[in-house]
Image 1: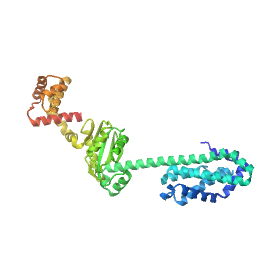
Image 2: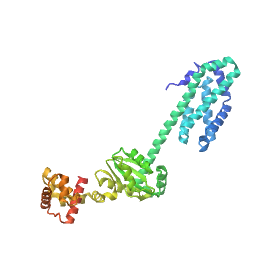
Image 3: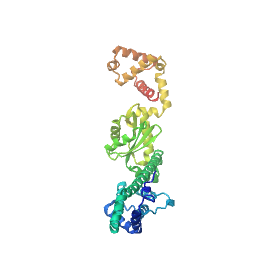
Image 4: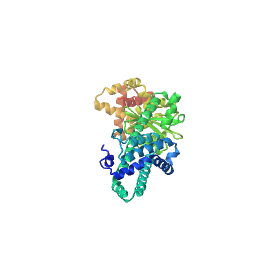
Length: 398
């Protein structure tokens, strides 16, 4: 970038302004003391946390004043390196120390005010001609000090972004450690509790959401209900750790249901970070055990049993429905649809007929066709259970 300081350096600084700059430069230690005193008096954030230390604050004030006054005195050394090293270093350190940017910029405004007041005081002592010189140079002086403010803010924001990225990577690593079963390690659990703001030994649940676009909104929806959560994207899904406190998993389901997520599974509550890996597996099972919406594991247990034993589920489909599945597409789909609707309607042919917009006798004829093909009976409870599970397995497993 172009350096605005050239506006007030060798080819632009008048002898009168350079004289004022040299006078201030000779008193840089005293000006530094006055600036530090003003900052501590006007901004309590510099004393509340103990950061920066008094030595750090004085050093940054001195270095920034020194560089600005060297420019005004026409004494900047072109070989000295980065002319903005002082504000950039200050912005970097203040961001690392957690000093609010507003406070940092306020300190710079105080520094600029102090420099201007010192310039005016020395100009008045030197007479009217020097005052005119200062008035003529005012825009250049303020451009210089404003550039220092811009550079400290730029450095602060860059460092803040780096810190945020580092913290995000650390949070992701801690969530991964918990999901991989390392929550039983005392150091991991303690670090995760602090970094994720979740209880190390309190009640939690895990949420697994299909897709990768819901985490931020999910966290906001849970926060509205007073539920703290931490999220991690893994492959084609998002995993959330939710601190329950006195709430229940039903509150989590209610919060996520209004978001319109396609599918999500919610684990039962577990006691502490040590069991997050177990909860994660159960939440993932709940996700796969249903085809749409948000569901707790306990609400989809039949489906959960099927997806955790896909070989047995495939065997169940073969044993219960193979002759029907062997039919041509239209007849097969019609019989499967009728059987599923009849089971949903509690075995009522009349309700099934109304659902499918056909006659009751049509429903009964289709059901008899299923009985004949499969060699099973509508009167046998075990056959009904197997049909129900086979239809569910076919829906979940394809």
